[in-house]
Length: 350
Image 1 (cartoon, helix red, strand yellow):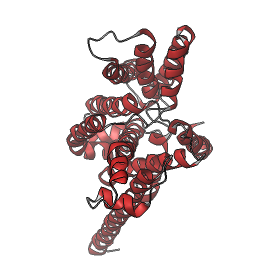
Image 2 (image 1 turned 135 degrees about the vertical axis):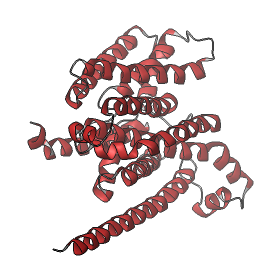
Image 3 (image 1 turned 180 degrees about the vertical axis):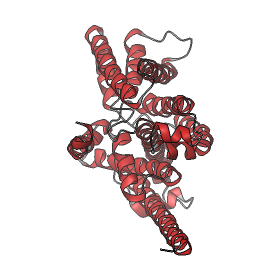
């Protein structure tokens, strides 16, 4: 094949991949909008989808529907989108920097650290001079950062290799789960009930102020991801090749862990522990788009948002009149997927 023909073939392949990315994003956006409308329409009182759409678009046909949608349903629906995007994005970053398809903030202890931080406030009371409603998310975000730092410091004993970081994350997962179980043992019946419900994960206490905080964190993380998108793509070639291309691998991993800490912390802080979204969403994005981080990262955020939005709808329709904790729904989806991934990657890792 001549050089000109090679260039033409590469150009055609690139344009085809770019067109595929755009198509996937548009389909995901349409699915997300539909998921938000369904989430806002479902609940103890099922609302007409057309009336909900009119209310969201600013053309209300019923004052009662308007009040229910904007005061109760829409904050829950948009929180599901924000949390799903944050978890999908954090999972995509973690799988990239560790080069491990089974890595996520949930499976490697970051979510467990945030959960322990929240349980600490619920059981022992707020030690910070702030109301408990704000002390819980602040402590959850703090311990998500502690878990990320622990993963990196323990993994640093093995020169911060991907394998060392994975082993450190698994160790911290069991540590924080044990500490949370200890808190449950000493908790009062009222505190125990609150801790258990919070660890299941629930969107029902979503409010507009909490949503703005999540969106602010997502917005603050975006410029750093845009700056590091090329380095993350190069990292998929391996540490040695990424370093040869001029990427400071150590610095990139530290920045990535900071972003993971913020994204996971703010997600877990307000809605509790929601598992497997950060594991499933990046794999769906990878199958549809590939490893190019310019498309992979936003697609992971979209897939996480769609997955959690649909899970929120399912949590309200499984049993009429009852709302299942959304963490149970996502686990029922994620566990079979996780087992499939373990079997699929068995030859590569064992």
